[in-house]
Length: 94
Image (cartoon, rainbow, N blue to C red; front, side):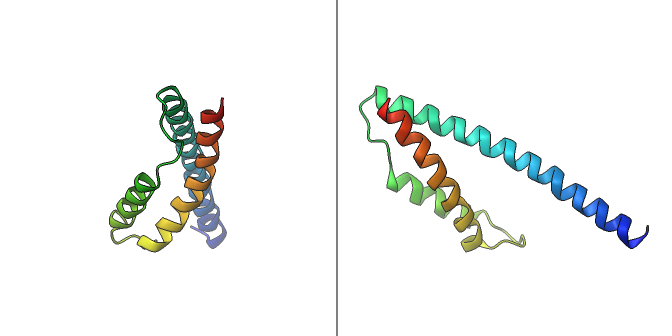
């Protein structure tokens, strides 16, 4: 395989991974919005810092031997949490 073909193959694999990641993030966002609606309907606070801390600990523990270590995965999840927190709060205000 030529070097440029290998690069094309690797980039195609990254593009495929990105597509799956987008689908998972959209699914997660939908679940977060549903949680926000449930909390609003049941008089619960929109945010749960203890639950967020639990998820951050769990993702660090699940890092294993991959190229991203626990702290790196926690930074990614922190960004995801910030965006989904916005959705939960919006659903809670409805």
